[in-house]
Image (tube, rainbow, N blue to C red; front, side, top):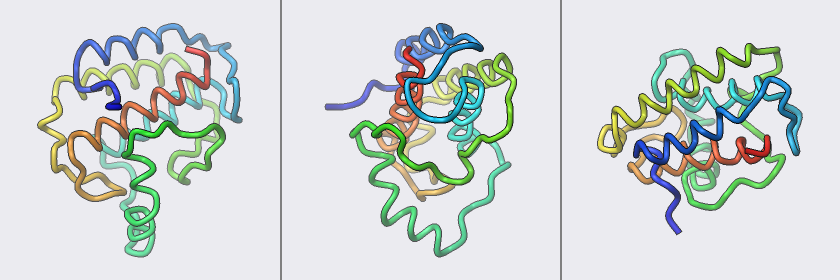
Length: 152
């Protein structure tokens, strides 16, 4: 079953509606992050796609990511609860809920504006060239996983 297409305004708007249900006091159903940290964590995916603030993995790590992690990230199978995350995605410090929420919504809108053709065949920082379907799966299922984590 194909995942919803995050590149469409309708799907992005549905995700934004779920994000808007979050409150600074929202509690996770599993995991260690608070809601502001979760939003910052979700922003990392988009930072890697749009910003130049994360280092590209070294050769060995790149081989590991492409050989073992990529399939899990870009397929349609939902993530399991409490799966370990990459170091760049670990948010240990306190974050501003409103700022992280606004950033995430901005990234979602930018993703729709650019559209799926912008991403088709574009290289990701960690996994090399991805199809538009792989980009969609990576974006959508990660965000959906964490919104479910916080009950929205």
